[in-house]
Image 1: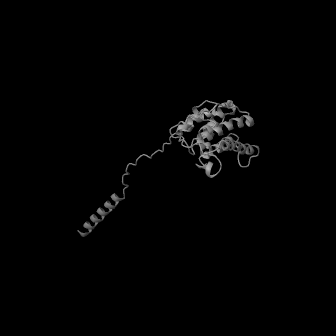
Image 2: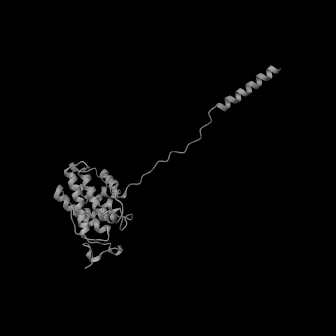
Image 3: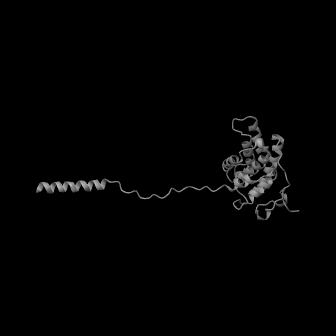
Amino acid sequence: MKKILTIIAVAAVMALVATSCKEAPKESQPAAEIEVTEPDPMVTLCLADTSRNPIEILEKLMSQPECPMHGPTHHVLVGAALLTAYNNCLPDSNKLNLEEALAEMRERGEQVPGGACGYMGACGASISTGIFLSIVTRNTPFSTDTWRLCNLMTARALEQVALNGGPRCCKRDSYLSVLTAIDFVKENLGVEMVKPEVHCTRSQINEQCIGKKCPFSPQE
């Protein structure tokens, strides 16, 4: 009798162990979250624009709600406007990959800190023209002729910004830099972008506006 009870007890234990060792049903896992990247409004606007006038493109970019009166945003927008207008002047066989160029422009331009004009003695809008030229000429620190051109581009833009005095106005400095780049590119690369007259429409919201001293002042 004892043997029978022992056998029954052992069988019960083995059945219990076997049941516990069965794989528990897997709980349903939530679907992996997919990161959605919002399109860059600057890139979207530039890719859709067919203008050969970089000032016109710059105005559209600066009119976006995320663009303040002053700030390092302009260190990207100047070069972006120039890249777009320059590319629109090229024949199809010589077109840039504009989307890649604009992404590179943003990456490099955002490395120029706000206040560089005052704290580093080099306006970021002017530096943006050098970034633009370095992208279109594929310039690197080891280049020769293009190295000279890119540094000269920035120097010429900085000169115009300096000659028109302070305090800072990111709109004025952006206009000056773009206009200087239009002439420089025509002279050195043979690509002729449209160069318009510029009249400021934002003087009333700029607390540091220099008024009639500004070359783009609407004041008589």
